[in-house]
Image 1 (tube, rainbow, N blue to C red):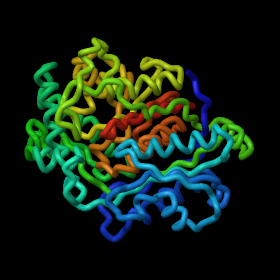
Image 2: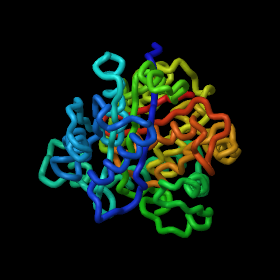
Image 3: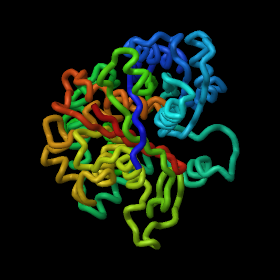
Length: 398
């Protein structure tokens, strides 16, 4: 089921961190201007804006495409705003791709940005007893880190993973992130540093759980023909996008749910949700896991990264820590994972994060990832999980 490709003409980011003097609009506009500059396309040439919404910044965050268009200066382009939790950025990219491939527009701007309060995410205010996200906080007291801790404990019980395995993920990613000028935590950590940080959700420590961050990212994408008219002969191409819903949810408690139906009744483990996200992207791009040169995965915690190795087919279940300790997922290894530094180096800016992953794919494939470059990279994957049956993945190639 190969799908026609689109071109990435430009990428841009605002550094991740905490910027109390800035709004999400300021952050997103900075990223958008960087992407426009990188592409060589003037703002007036953009025919469509696809905005990834933020739910923590009032009504302007719910109509992000219009908000960003207004801030950049209304010029008559078409708009679409969307929200899909952590998958919002690629959902916005998917809408832009559909507009381009259908002939509605030739060139589009995709933008996501967030500005959040300090501390972990809390439920949206109000009493909503039919809202599972409200219930998991109020009924069971399950914050995001609580789920991360349960996932880590599950790996320890099933596969014998240890706290030092999880700490080694953080160490690897911190070494990558130390070379990334957009990272919030551009610092290398040791196993001792990780183990000395306080426990947040047993067995995970502070340095193993991603923080909440302000950040923004943007892409300029177009048809391949439009790229040629601009003299761009060999752009990075988006070959596959996945935003599938589950056939069978995971057979474990997964954020924000308390329980779920099990794939086990069907006997088909390949249909667990995170596997499906990757499988659909591979199918669209007509590639296999062995074709990947690197991957950007959603390491909400260090233990989650090990899960992703297995879900995207880099190794069999239970073998992720072997891949890690063999050095395969480090820069210079067979399949570097999170050369950007991942969420451990950035923190999480929900509507921007999946777009930021595609920015990293683009820089790597263009050979522009100075200090963290995956040598000879030709095909890369990004993947994340966005709650409520949302997830996303992108395959990009040279």
